[in-house]
Image (cartoon, rainbow, N blue to C red; front, top):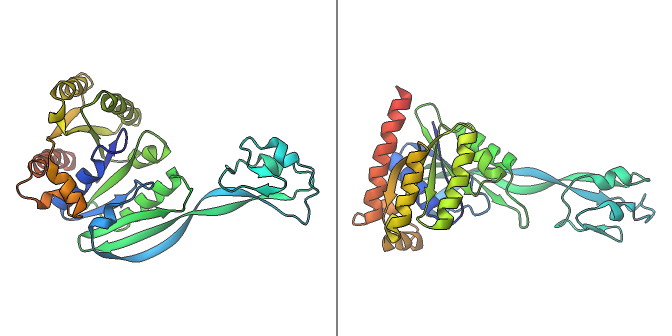
Length: 286
């Protein structure tokens, strides 16, 4: 089974909650699909047992042997990526228009490495993760690769917990497509509600079982109530409500999952939410 944890935007506590659930699940494979800001592995001691290159994009390359400096490629480029016969790789989007207009066939597209992909063995199981190249962007193909790698180390009895990307873009779509359930982490603010609505509609479009978690719900009870009301109207179960807790920041600074802090209010609330999630998992497996 795959449980994907996402949020409408960054900074809502998504990774903290995904990691806490992973600790409580114990026998679990983790996939860090927040490829623009991967940090799950920082909380564990481990070693990389596999590393491979990921080629997720293409860039234009000009062969000076054939180039006559006609500038047709420069004229057609919509991204201002070619100047005086030199390609700026940070601007090139690999669309290939330049290859079509070059009368000398001097321009071609070359596959570009955009990430290193790792399988990391930790003292708490496998993490499938990636490290993006500077200037690269997260892609759906990379997320698909990370999920595929995670599945190689699991079976039907082992839960895969995916720390998804924030937002509603291509990486998020790749994170949730085919997942058994999605947990949306939101916060009680107006922008949090609006982000939640967008990502919930995305989950609904793909027909994924969706739960909601309101993090730091007690910093704005009124807005938390509005989010809860919206969830009821749209048949989304609020499976957990996490109170604000200074210990969460302490746990991040000390690189220890929040569930290791016994007196933490957030810890207790996340454990209760995990019990609720387990009930649903058991129903699905029956």
